[in-house]
Each structure stands twice: as C-alpha cells, then as structure tokens.
Image (cartoon, rainbow, N blue to C red; front, side, top):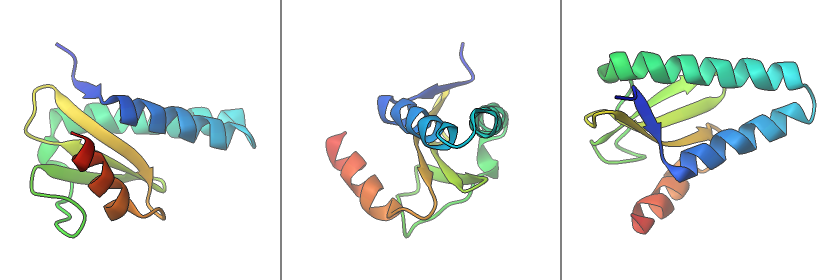
Length: 103
C-alpha cells in the first residue's frame, strides 16, 4: 500500500510549483519538491503532527508548512490523502472552499 496519495488537484499544484520555481532555478525546484515529498512520507507515518486550522478547513484536514507551501491533507485516511499543496500567501480559505464544493 502507498504511504500517501495525491488528489489530481494536488498533483497539479506540485507541477505548477515545480514549473514556477524552475523558471529561475531547476536545482531549487528539485530541492523544494524533494522536501515536499519527504514531508508527505513523514506525515503518512505521523499524520497527527500537522496543524488543525479551523479558520481554513473542517476538522478532517490538517496543514503542514514546507518552505512557503502548505500541504493540506486528510489525516484519518489510509493511505494519507494530500488534498492540495498551496503557497501560504494565497487565499487558502477561498481555494479550499472551492475545492470542497467540487467534491
């Protein structure tokens, strides 16, 4: 069984992050993606280490910051489900509201 799964939106987020950073530095883009992936494995082993952010999402979701990116995940799923990976400066609440309306 996989340690975690990415929703299609999370996969797109990660691709977008890589493309944005790689426009300036491919090495930096690789470092960020590696850090995100390592953190996702860590979260899968210890899902409770993320933070509850009730102003952003319901209690099913947890958040974990890596560099300037928030990994948004459902901590009770097996395997761990990564919902989105978003830059923390974005309108995270608005984006998550739109995502939950699509589910």
